Length: 137
Image 1: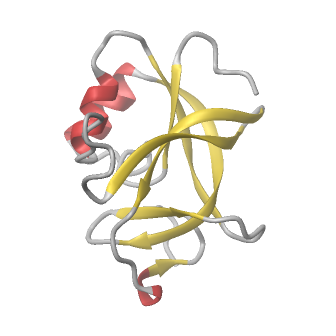
Image 2: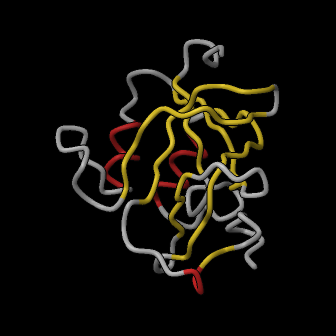
Image 3: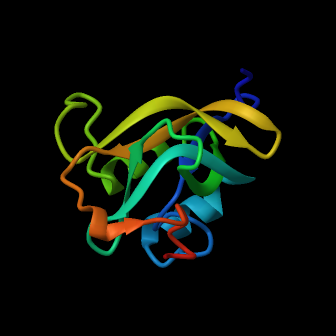
């Protein structure tokens, strides 16, 4: 699967999406990164607090909807995203969110991208069944 040019792609599915963009992190991502387009990832989406958490899955009817962004090299965006998600690369198993490379279905097919997955407790009554944080349900 090809990488997206020289940029490092990241899949966003919650408060970093362009349609939400109310946080400083989302505004910076929108301003400095290149939006590639809509994408999906196999898994389930849960409302954790005011933000969602993605739990990877394999059922064909469980997709999380979001967007792919290409991050320019050497601008500190990945570090900013890690801080926003409270992910520490030097201690990857700590915290509720982890960042790893996964296969994501992008606008031009399957690509490898960074995805922040949620590893905290979830409750089925807080599941976003549509898989789309903006749409809800």
